[in-house]
Structure formats: C-alpha cells, structure tokens
Length: 142
Image (tube, rainbow, N blue to C red; front, side):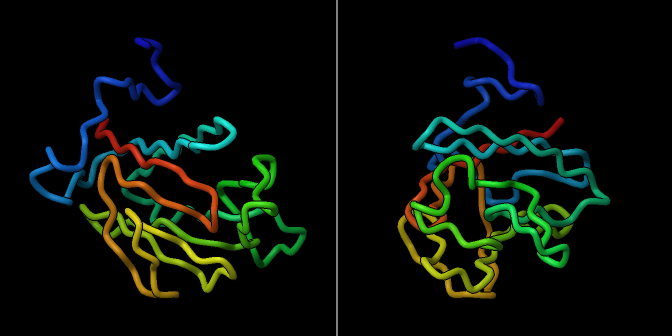
C-alpha cells in the first residue's frame, strides 16, 4: 500500500519499536501523528505543531467542559469500554506522553495498564488500548 494519508504518513515510515534508538522521536517542528484502530478500521490523524500540546481521546460528550479531540463513539467506543474523556496525548518539547484520565476501563500501553493521571512516554509503533479498543500509534516529523 503506497497510498499517502492526508498527513503524508506511508507504511514505509512505520518502524517497529525495537528499531527506535530513542523514545524522543520528534523535535519542536510540526509532527504528524496517526492513531490506527485495530478493530473497525478507524484512522485518526492529528498534527502536533509546537503550539498545540494536548489531544484528548474519548467519546463525544454533550458537556462543553469535556472537549474530545478524537471521538471513538462511532467505532463502538461505548461497547469497548471507552470513557467520555478517556485519555490524553500530551506534548512536552520533544517528547510525547499519554495520560489516562481516570477512565473506567483503563488505558494500556504495550500491554501494561497505565496508572490514572500519571504520564507515560510513547513512541512510534506503540500499541495502545483504550478500554478494550486496541490501536497503534505512528509518528512522523514533517
């Protein structure tokens, strides 16, 4: 598959995590991230320019104080145990972190459950589960 996604990420950009020399996979330039759901084929792409620091994952809520950047409701998020505000990607300079927002069914990173409200550094190719909804994270500098 040589088709480019809207952010220019192609399969040849994907590297297994074992090939990564460092978890610091991007600098203060615009970074393209892709969250690919393993169930239902959902694909979410989000640029992370230096001035954007967070992306919230969950199910769309009617509450204005719970904004969700990536809505997993259309991908059976409720059935897979995704909370309204489930987790958040957080950028800090040249590093990307994942934080579980005290979700009911937990967030998992490469098979390990995250402790709520703690941050965990993520890297290109990491497997993330939001409740029981599995996804892969891909990162590319642009």
